Length: 98
Image 1 (cartoon, rainbow, N blue to C red):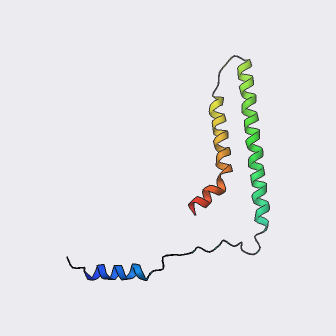
Image 2: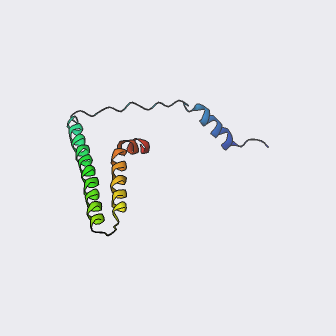
Image 3: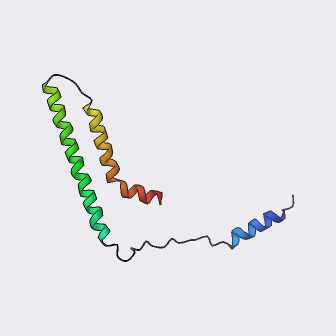
């Protein structure tokens, strides 16, 4: 079977393209230094709320145990831990997608 014109053009285009394409290193735009402060405050707030969520859930578990009734506190604790994992891995998730 003889190669067609399309096959020959495709082969020529593939060999003409550079194979080692380097991505440029990310650079911060000028005037965005204040974003680090905002991001660090946001992360501190998320960590504070996560600890507060664990403490509130633990307190609710103690009260429910003392009153002799069960509760869905493990589900709440699971949501708190899920939020903590998501907040802790936010930068990794963004880097993975980009």
